[in-house]
Image (cartoon, rainbow, N blue to C red; front, side):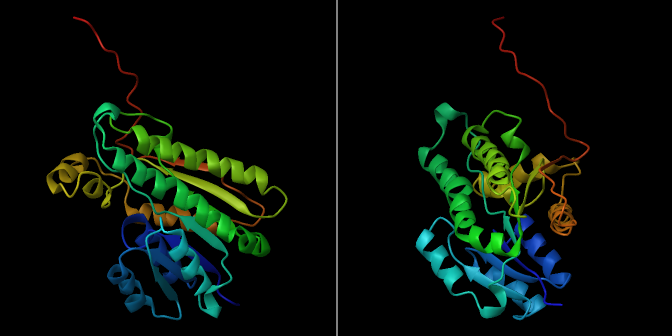
Length: 251
């Protein structure tokens, strides 16, 4: 049987790298996309060029994205699953103290780039009766101090996923939204500008979700029978739960 093909964004680290490795290790062809070519090359070294094709570009650059898709080798053109994983959080300040440039970067990456790539691949995914798996976050449901625009972008991803399900009704294309809670990857390092101490403090003793946990979940969703769709799946470590509402007191 011809192997199926998955395209994974943000595949150079964290969830994306684990997802790409999970699919490649199980015989799929993987298109691994990210900015850091040297990180992507590690996947090729591990699995070979017949199993992994890399595309190094900034997902915010639509022209480069289109060029990368046009340049896909023949064996990687029939994409069965799109995993929209690329995304980031920047800054922890409340809205009134936030950096507007960071807000724009989160919107451009988490929203604009995601919808652009999805739209470009929809014809092929419909043709293949494929699947779209979006990586959102519990931040799109549960607000927290400093989450402002990051949480809003993930709420968009969640609603966009539901909208896609509606529009793709009858095409056979499945759409799923994965919403992780606390997970230990490079996420906090990126968010804090490389503050390792802050990252270590956040995850210490919490037994957070791992990248491999998310890879296993995405793999399970992608390999469900064609008549089943997981609309949304919310995941937290057992140590995490919704903390409740805040109350500001005068005394």
